[in-house]
Length: 143
Image (tube, rainbow, N blue to C red):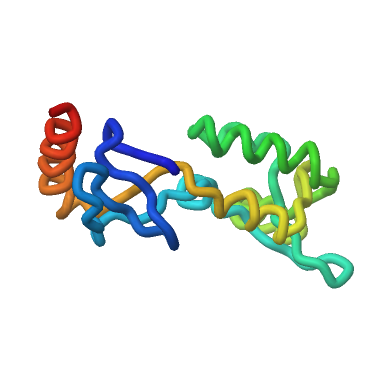
């Protein structure tokens, strides 16, 4: 069961988060998935199947190490090398048939991997309260 904030919060059933010292739910906290940190690359249809287009130089778009590992795995296990739409470059050059080297990954494989929970997140307006409550939970657990 994943925990965050030094073990003060744990993920419960159905994507809910609760305080470890009391078991009380924390409705302001929600799952952080790989998809939340991954680039939003273009999708295309080929042969009746939908693919995520991943540029060959995808490393420049990805800074999170968990996302880097996931994309590398997807490219290796499910990817097919292909010419993909040169998004950004095509618009800048006004050449809408421009392509670059890349990878096609079936959207089902992409969605399955990117839905993995890697932590928790909350809105900035709730942060001070959550961090203060986490400190209390850690103190209560150490008693």
